[in-house]
Image 1: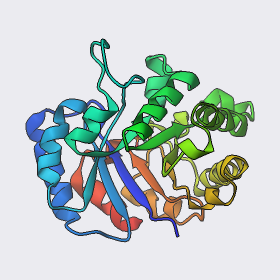
Image 2: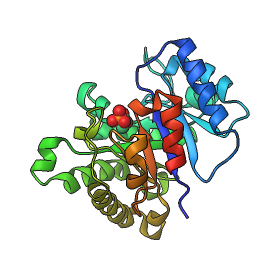
Image 3: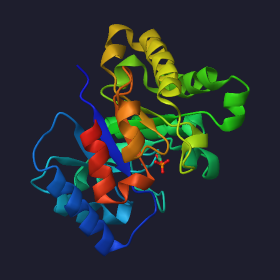
Image 4: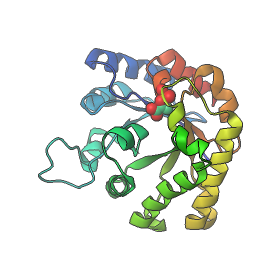
Length: 249
Ligand code: PEP
């Protein structure tokens, strides 16, 4: 019922030639639609090149962030309409690196989410707890708060086909991965929370896991009933690894 999604978050890595090559390698690995949807999220400046490299393949394009306003005097920002115009289908909002280092609080993330939806993009809403929050047994409370903030801003009708990525902060870029059981527990709690907002439609929302997902742990994580794909950081920078994860889904 849920079409799994594997999305690569390239973060701030790679110059133009690298982006073109990596996008082309992923595209040639996914020439036609598969049982798994595949997307890459390069840095803004590489989106147009990546779109050209992906043309004719089944790989979708995504961005890593989006302005919280539609247009205007917002120096340095990139609007949702611009992302859609360059060929994006997805955009990551609320990644923990933005929440931790760039002041993206729940309210700002919700504004970014709203802009994405209004431009017809599919937001990939990142949620997740820090290590201190996990140790304080606050994981469910934290991810519920992060999800609720978006519903408070856009309402149930505004959620659309958005995707949620559960990314425990302590697992991102650390080589430390949530166990499949830990991921499943949080995903099940998220789906319950979504049911409170969306009713039966919560069963159709794709919930991705992110945090040091690699070829050797992907299959176990993706075998969990509520893990509907992955948001992949480090391992998305090598086509071979990224495509291996796509195959594991
Ligand atoms: C991410 O940045 O979304 C991520 C999951 O990174 P990594 O796979 O490197 O932990």
